[in-house]
Length: 380
Image 1: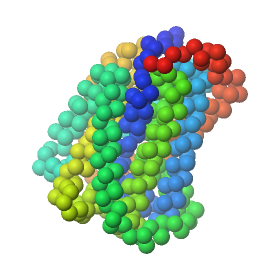
Image 2: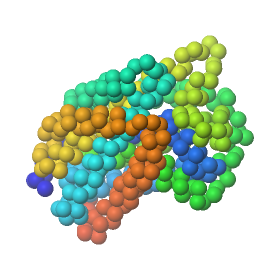
Image 3: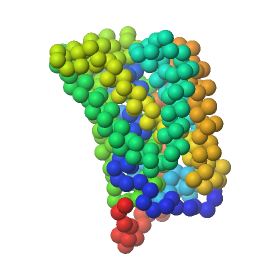
């Protein structure tokens, strides 16, 4: 790999880092995962979801431990240091390809959701083009401006989503949740393996910790993981509590269906669905921007280019995501990508790979910088 060049000090504030981390893995399968989880795990769905959350926290903790051992570096720099040049480059290439595949599938998922729920007469290509153009602009302006955008937009979108979820709670029937508490361990394992995709994009922690100015704020990422995991858990509980676990699997997007039937006299009675659509659009545009930034940065690193040359690859990455996003002919193909490809790959790269990198780093004697070095770091 090329000689390491640290990013200029003061790149990301703690708030920008937190907002980017939360935005980087909120949108993936937000509407689809309750149905997929109910179909795969059945009455063990809730247990599968809780185990997935625990695994996500463990994977995030391992990535943050690596960030402490390699301050100012990303996986682009520390993977070859830990594993050797060629195995490290293989890790970078695998993450690049997986991020690209995820972005293509997310583009298709967003486009179909918009066509089915909000704009049924608009061509899918036009929706995908506007979506990716917005993401390209946000990734092009740079990580710090993107972080500032997430710092404002994500809390607004998340507040809208949680407000509507709270409105929907009044329609939850506790008896609908009881079947999901009965574990069948084979079904639990299938649920974790095939419906891990909402959590897998915490892989942004392979990159973002290398850009934060104040290293003492690295653990803010665990708050982001906790908030996002709680959001997915709330979405599942409310959706299953209203529709029933045994009904979820027959609906393509049960969360969107639930929003259509929510009524709250005197407050957003007729427009809850449109409000959720705005929130969903914000989530997805921020997510796509971070994905395109990550893929472009990984590409620059794989080609031994400095970090600031990532913009060279934003256009080709967006074009590839557009082509992948329009490659699926129906919802069944899209569901297969989520449950049979993305989720298992997410478990490997989001849980297993961080653990392996951390253990090998410890065995090879890589340690965090001494306390005196950390004390010299100045907050942004």
